[in-house]
Image 1: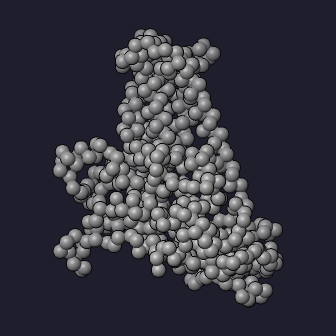
Image 2 (image 1 turned 180 degrees about the vertical axis):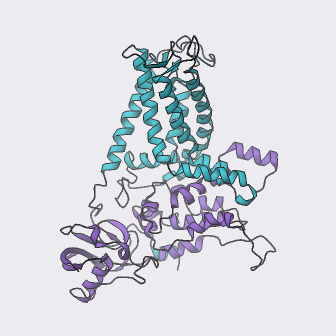
Image 3 (image 1 turned 90 degrees about the horizontal axis):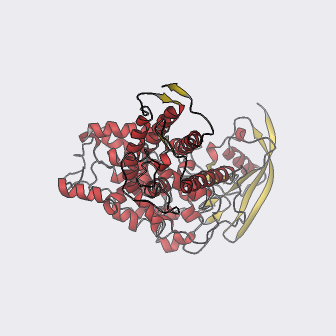
Length: 252
Length: 269
């Protein structure tokens, strides 16, 4: 098994300040960035704080920015870097830092609670839900989310504008609204909430959320744009309005 | 914990990193290419609209899509396939006074072009994880960008124009004197195929055809159509660029033939 020494730069510090610290570190064939961070913990930087769990790209814990790109550390192979390339690892920029590579992602839990819950038809009890696969598969794509918050971190609406945080839920939770809106048994009309309370209008569909999603969920094409179109149905389209009146449609 | 406790101040508690981005790849390259392409192609179209000449080849029934339909009495004789609605237009008003705003509106509010323009022209953001220069941002929640929600209107109108473009392409096979076609006819057909690809793959089309439904199982035909459109939708960016370039090249070819710079390569007739 071959190995070589690699130049790492890791952000060290807390909310009061910090800096990029240089480390030479041994890299073995087949390793990922998280392995190298662990090696640093075992050797030169034993107090380095890092959040991690499954090492398999399924828990969403080890989100960080590697050479400026939001990634999961456990899914970023060292073989993607040239041997002489400096690898810079920093914490997620959008959230308050706790220490080193660990951030406070509480913003996301607050936003999760702002999304109105699933609302089944009146009189239908749990256990009586019956759905066809063809009706649920759109929502199932969104259930692949591992809550890594890379999309929330990358979205420039809050990444570059802290002041937008109260008004904007972020792509992960706008996708949650889309999941419910497309759910065959959900009867709530979420089109006004998503526009007025969760800030869908802030999204300018530049697709960074889709680019960073480690689960390859088509967040923009399959969730955000369909939600924008549903808002248009309700607020901007006279033909749909006329059709609803003529055919007395209430839902399809 | 309320949101106020999470953070409401600018940069509250974030890691202090002064660099605009730590990305080491050439993240500026694609937005730069897009900005140049969009500027060149839009600039060409605007100049062309004011030229008012060499847009119709009467001998072969070639009408450039930029001037179709031509509906003014100022149009070159024979080019007004659908009659004239306007009388003579002063020279400072382009002949495609109806067509151009529709095409510009359709492309300008298109979900793909929005991404391209926001990134390459408005720098909002230039690339992912690269700090945008604007101090404030409200996206499409306020005027004027909330007008992007009118994409669907432009989709309806542009679809009507595309039917006319299709008719023009068919006419290019029936020049005065009977059936016949040349390279120009084939270019017009290829252009129309790409335009249909772009229009049908539109996100608004995908939504109208079936995306808005809650229960696909109750609408099997629309579900099948939605599936097809979804397949095309994945290629929307490719169709957007290919059709923009094809419209331009079609216009260049017809202008060259109409001006007598080149002769049309006739295949039949």
